[in-house]
Length: 196
Ligand code: 5GP
Image (cartoon, rainbow, N blue to C red; front, side):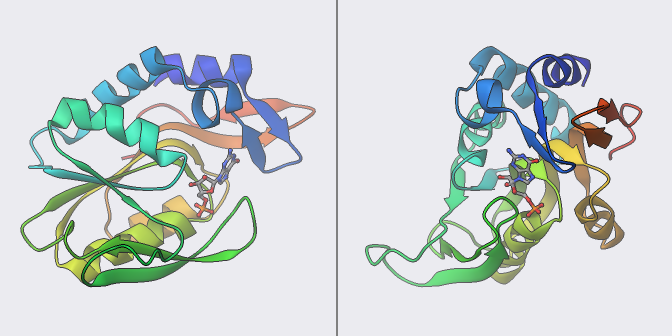
């Protein structure tokens, strides 16, 4: 997605060899006009797949998921990173190792909000080693819901998550795919539209 790549080039900040900071438009301050373009693009790619629920993980996926849900006219469920006592009924639970914090989280979704009647689109901001996305896929599988696929804003294609998850047969659509990046050389993108 050209507009997104331009914005990453303009405002993204590379830290070390594998972390991209996009706090000015995605992860801290949020550019809602850009989010609308992103949501519309996810809709274009997944329209006709029968999506009736969007699943994401707190916190950074929530904003993008909500704007995307306006195109699909469906609810958003966000997986929570720690067990809270005030969720009624049973829980689907999985473990996710955080790329940015290096910790392992229990990630949960109430069984009230995900089930065999749902067709789910997973939305997240980044795909790196794939732990977050694999955790979300695991929750969908536990629930018996149908998985339409995953929409990712930025995939770091030089990290292994995307290839591993596509190899399992999951449709992963990433709007910007970074082939390589470094503080000295900046960011190089993969060719467009090869991510599906
Ligand atoms: P994974 O589980 O695929 O290794 O990492 C995905 C999660 O880690 C994303 O939900 C995102 O929050 C975070 N993440 C991974 N890489 C980056 C990065 O380069 N920059 C930022 N800002 N977050 C990242």
